[in-house]
Image (cartoon, rainbow, N blue to C red; front, top):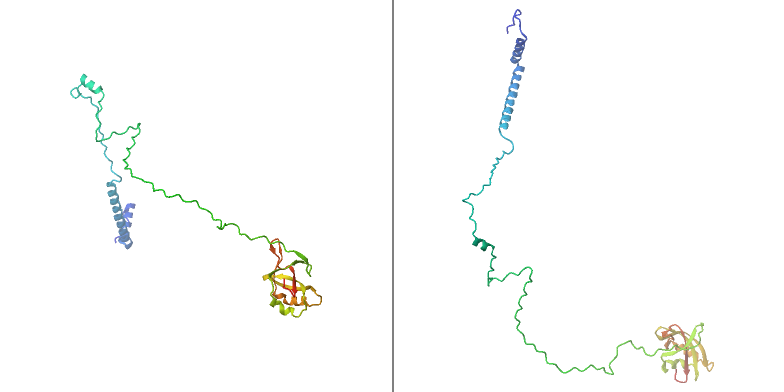
Amino acid sequence: MSQPDPAIEITPVERLRLALAERLRSGAGRRAIGLGLALLIEALLILALISLGSSVGFGDAEEEVTVVNFEATEPSEEEQPPEPTPEQEQQETRPAEPQPPDAATPPAPSPLEPAPAPEPRAVIPTPFRLPPAGPPRPAPTTRPDAPVYGPVDSGPAVPDTARVGTAPNGQPLYAARWYREPRDDELAGYLSTASGPGWGLIACRTAPDFRVEDCVGLDEYPAGSRITRAVLAAAWQFKVRPPVLGGVPQVGSWVRIRIDYGTRPS
């Protein structure tokens, strides 16, 4: 490359042009040119898209409104209807004559008048006969032997058992009442060791099932006859009712029992 002649004066613009020419000749200059061209192409594409978008209108197009004005025009003399004659005026003012109602269509009821009641249908009478009256029924009679229902009759009230003394432990002693009297064969074996005739007297405490227990001897006649000892030995077979106070059996109370030897026991 030829150097500029120093005798020739170089302007600043010429210097800038020469510097740009030197840079373009180098590799960096060529890359700068390619980059610039790419940027220029992109700028042209953006301008083209913007120009196309501006040509297309956004939004709805304005609708055209058509306004129609109607002017009232007076009818001409030819178009005016003819005036009615006096006969037509009388016919118009005369009230309309009521027409006879149609026989097929029933008249509608007035809203102020009540609707007519429907006609009752014909009822065919049906013959009705009362059943023949039978003989009168006899009144029920009560038989004299018929049972009368009511409270259970418990029989006469049992009186309180008589007190006859004091038991060995200090409790009351009552007279005994047999539930079942002892038989002769039940006493014969025990009384065979005693001498009689005579009697023995003992006191026992009543127990359930009409039994007696804890018996003790009280007295005998004749003295030393051993009748009381024989009666105490046979007492386990005795069946005695417990004393009654106020209608309630007093099981566990003491009773006095007498056995006669040589006569029927009582």
